[in-house]
Length: 474
Ligand code: GLN
Image (cartoon, rainbow, N blue to C red; front, side, top):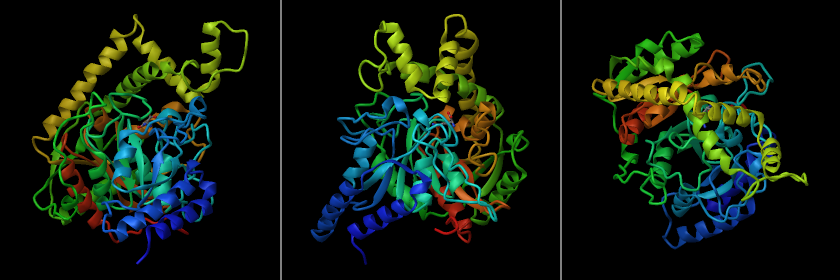
């Protein structure tokens, strides 16, 4: 009924119309139109690939050959990679067309997209009877807003402690990150290497199945890439959840700082899963309550190590001050190039790794990480999937929580346990809050069981199909 060029053009028009949302750091509209013409030719020649002509947004931490890749930082504001990340290459090889590089929190550190050097992203959603701009979540906030605001059909994101699931929940989109090791990290700007994992945002579970199918797979260029057969995923979206055992970690229901609306959504989704034929079982995650402090030791530790490469010598920002010795040049470069949140994490990380503190903090956190992972293994003896909210609240206002790092970190309370355990997980939009904002439920599967993750996600999606997750006016 329409050509790839028409499809791509429609999304470019929408991106131009919604410029105030600040979704893209770099737009690649012209290249996109050229590729769309090739896609149309492929359709005509009967050579169309599975994602031929599909317009996508790419989070600005996937290196893209010849296209600026900033990681949302002044440090990389003018960095043009000479190579392509494995994940962005994988999807392009299946026919996707990049519309632009999506805005993000600086080096993926944040939950609101407010730490981007290129300005914050605005959520396409607004609360009922309110004109206040809301955050799209973070760190993949440009990606979530791109899909929710109809400027792309799918968007690549990355999730270290919740950066796909939380923004998906805040924008009424479906977000999923597979098992650690499924998606190659090669060519992805590193934040916390033992946690970083690529994933995707789409408007439906089935769309994500197609994207993940293209993204996942072994890559010899990433030493933590896992060489394991990738399951076929599309059929999972149609398979009933009849007989599946859904585990509810009841011990997390009375956690502090969780809005009553979220608890209600949680209880409602239990009923929704039952209505789809699933069986509900109670499980316990007794160490999950320590996940937040554990993450905020491990992630900064790895970040402080990863970010030491930005020294103003090899690439990235370099101070223009002259007459400095080497150490002064490093200091001036890093002082100018990094934002406040990144500096805070580098300092915490350097501290917890220092010789006098490593036992007390970093090694202790590693031991706790193991206990958290063990809790999940225990829970999966009873359950196929674990069901809990994605976030403790709906999307909040721009600027809120910004001067209180701890309040911001609490956003990650439900998402971090699965990240520490390396498990595949998703966020499914299931309800609207009293103010009319989308809320998302999180599903977590055992390692490498993306099949059942999507199967259960699609079950929940079916149960919520009478709710419209299109933001007002879009
Ligand atoms: N909000 C979390 C943080 O600030 C998670 C970010 C992420 O997953 N990249 O670290």
